[in-house]
Amino acid sequence: MTINDYIDELVKKHGKDYDGSNDPVIKKHDEITRLLAYTKDPLFQYFDVDSVELLDLKIEVLTAIKDGKLPKDIPRFYDIFELLPPEGQVWD
Image (tube, rainbow, N blue to C red; front, side, top):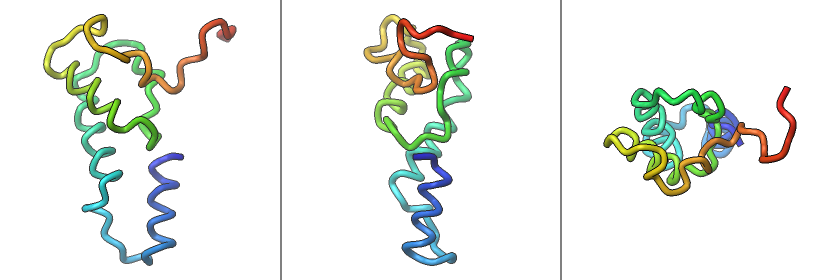
């Protein structure tokens, strides 16, 4: 599910005047967006910024990057790249 789909669901549920600023998913998504400023690795082209999946893991990995850790020192670093083709799949 994308963040836009999630917000659409909230609006349907609560009405068009719903203020989602206290919603935990929206807060986590905002935190991820802020933390992405600290990334420089080309792999981040495979990072799905619109996804609402793996939010806690994404925050954990991105925080580690912000704190100066190298990818090899971050458990599950590669798990946050949802758009990365699965191993063995041919790339175009």
